[in-house]
Image (cartoon, rainbow over all chains, first blue to last red):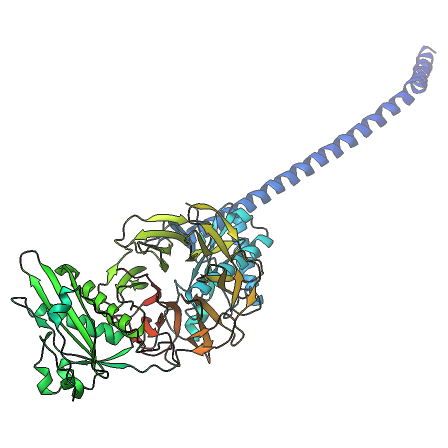
Length: 204
Length: 435
């Protein structure tokens, strides 16, 4: 009899517990689950952000490395040049290509636009280097008119580079007229090489 | 047979010059020029004067008269034997006996050197052999170091007596000469002698121009890595930076009153014609087109400026008023006309034009009429400039290979190189007379 009553008591107690505690406990468990999910999401977002940040950092590092490499490459390509009778030392780069002009013309030829774009890309990578565009002519025609023509040829390239995003104050011009031929010959082959814009680096 | 005797002693006492009727033997403006044959017997060394002294004067005068283009000099080496022996200024002269020489003018002279002071005295006389009369006699005195200068003044006098205007034998020419590592400014006398280097900086030195007083040369140099305008004296000293606008500062042309300078100046990325005061001040832009403007040249009356512009697509000569107004195009023939140079008398403009693929020297009236081509099919000919009397034009030519300075009479006759150099010369500029 005594055992039976204990059993019933326990049973009641259990029921009581069931009726009083169970709903409560269920609620508690649900809240915990939601919190966990939120935390997980937060963590995920954090990780993702972290990953993104790391990726970005890596990208930036890679970009900086690339730029540094380009800059190094550009800087490595620079050769100092001193001309007697002309003040200062300039730097020349084989990566900055000359452009050429038709006889008596000063407009940039369509086939030379890509050269100017490549020059511009190079110049944008290399921070703040000041450059000078030299306008040159072939020996034909008169010295003074050729000086005017060279001035215009240099300015044609300057304006083109500015239109591609190079800061105007980074580019100056100088006309050498027919005074500095690249090829000393007296035929069209020489002349076509001499009608040119040459780009030099004035920094340092 | 008429004999002409002249009392020389009396003449010198009276003060050297004898009045002569104003007869112009040569009309230098005639389209074709006939050269006057002028006979020159040997000049005599008086007293103990070394014979080399009159010989040198004789040589310079004979060469000058030849270079002038007005004369055909018959020197004593080409005279009949009987005349070859005659020298100096005889006490009495029989003009008739000089007829076989073939000359129309007879020029005789002597020189004496005072050994203590080295004072040189040169006397000369000349006669018209056609009309059998004395024209003039003169005497010059100076230090023997000025021998060449005295010979130049004698030549000027002969030219004056026979053409009505003095010669330009005391003038000089400035020009550029290629040197190892640069292009330098040089000056030489009209006869190519007394060559002198003015700049010595290994830079690119261009477009020399004489200042109106003849004491300095203006030129463009790249010394400061920009084509700036400088002044320098004839000894190559006192270099002075004159115009240093970023870009071109080239081709100055002084206004006839000497107060202003027109020049090519880089403005806004292209060449313009600008005016600056000789006393300084900011430049005033005269041209206003989309073209390239070059090489201004003042008219001698100071009212106008000739210049080059390619505003119509090709370089052509234009004329504007000295304030930039009233622009009119002067040249229409050919597609390349540059380097205008206004003659000192105002009647012609010389320029360089491309004719049949070559660059030639041409002249034209300021009204656009009377086009004349002075060089023809012998190399490229550029940069014409006038002598101060307007009777000669200096220019550069590649006819003998490398570019050299040439001089010709304003009608294109008598083209000859200034010096016997190998070449590399360009941009001649003619000085005023140095008397």
